[in-house]
Image 1 (tube, rainbow, N blue to C red):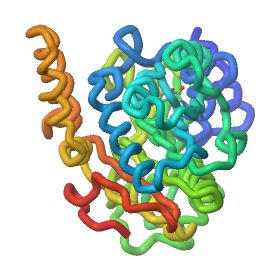
Image 2 (cartoon, rainbow, N blue to C red):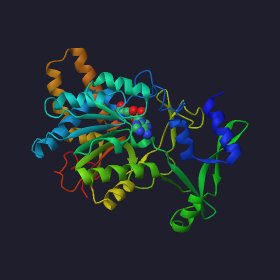
Image 3 (tube, rainbow, N blue to C red):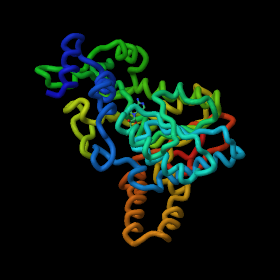
Image 4 (cartoon, rainbow, N blue to C red):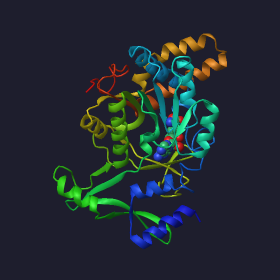
Length: 357
Ligand SMILES: C[S@@+](CC[C@H](N)C(=O)[O-])C[C@H]1O[C@@H](n2cnc3c(N)ncnc32)[C@H](O)[C@@H]1O
């Protein structure tokens, strides 16, 4: 029997159905059996491969994006780069290749012991923290690739003119969805009912809000910027809660702790939090457009000059996967935040939303 399924079943029998957010919290972050605590989720042996491990050009282009900021700031020595959820460490390693001898303060924030071991190997001199609040208070660039989608989301459905929370119930250890009247659903019914059709689904991610508020506070007080690459939306999306196992979509309730759980990121909500915090918001641009604008094709051509035929083929396949509209180029979006005193950020002048707000 899956140990987390048993744990979740017992919680439900004792206290009633739990929210999707609580289910995600236990399944992903349980100290002993949570997906992001123990398992090796990434790479060819894991459930999915991410952009830094698909092509070195991804990290190098982010390195160039950071270099542009650092030069515009007149080359400060008091400056650090933080990778939020650093995965296998590939991204910071590739960024370091571009920034070598210029910026040397690198920080990983992560909770997965296996991945932290790999990060230590990838970049020996980097520091490691579990929380943003613990890092040095100096000008900072935060990077999050596929970081925000992992945080627990609440989901609500409009039923009989009221909102119900989509929850998880259990019978004989079989987990299934149920619609419940909760404190949160009642609050939403009071504030937000008339312009949604019956059956509409909305998602609210309080944890992402908290992280964005935290980062916004940090860069407002210490100066800096943050860039995020993720799948997400500006306008109402519906049900985006999903499970991923062995590179395929799977029933998110099937195997708690052994399946990655994600939801699409609500960029409009992030823009709202940025505005409230008096922080600049950029994007969303598509990943393809961002990489193109920042010179990914030129970088590919440069690398090809010294590559063997086999390496050339690999480089082309990798970059095409990141940039092509039919692969990750359109699905993945890029957004950024910056403190008001910061230089303007490159890579956001074309794409789905052109304006900086
Ligand atoms: C989908 S992976 C992306 C990894 C990496 N950014 C990449 O692109 O390869 C999510 C990362 O976030 C980390 N993570 C998940 N929850 C976290 C949390 N609450 N705090 C810090 N890191 C977390 C995971 O361990 C993992 O390294």
